[in-house]
Length: 218
Image (cartoon, rainbow, N blue to C red; front, side):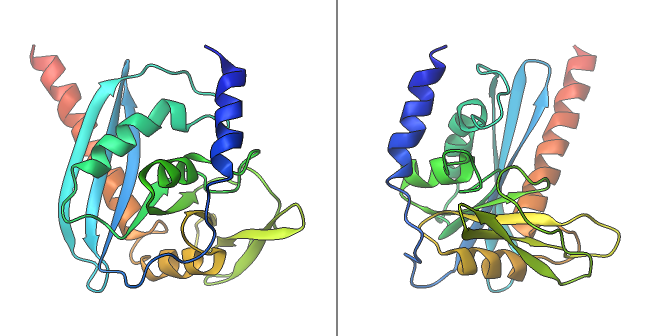
């Protein structure tokens, strides 16, 4: 594994990230999340109607894990599956929310940004833990606080529910910091995660459970 080559690739692709809104309207959004079982990765993608929040389609991809977990290089572990799962969704989503970092990353290209650059699509990164940058975690429901990196606001920490930790929202590609926050916030309902990612998480877990059951029967 040539780690320096991957770091150089991230630095090169970082220059292609666009932190401006490059969409005219939002009809469909997608959420992507991955789960692991033994030597396999299960990646689920869920398509959601943005105005109504209705679930339109669920797709998944199962493949062998071919890259170790290394902080800052999550794309190389999950990205291939993420792109395959997104490609199965029709109609095409206008915005893709990914359980992973956006520009809150040492080289400002987390997995959501990396996917967005490769697909030339609008992406948003949503994480449950603070990865890179600094912020004061909000404590009141509905409160947000800026995530700062290099003296710039790169995203927001947001507390959506009682008795939950904040989530961390940053743009991936082709969307502004403020729009990434507003779109994500508009998609939060019953759970702390936005609907597309929560549904992808649930779907990946159900596929994992089915996979476990099928291997027991063999």
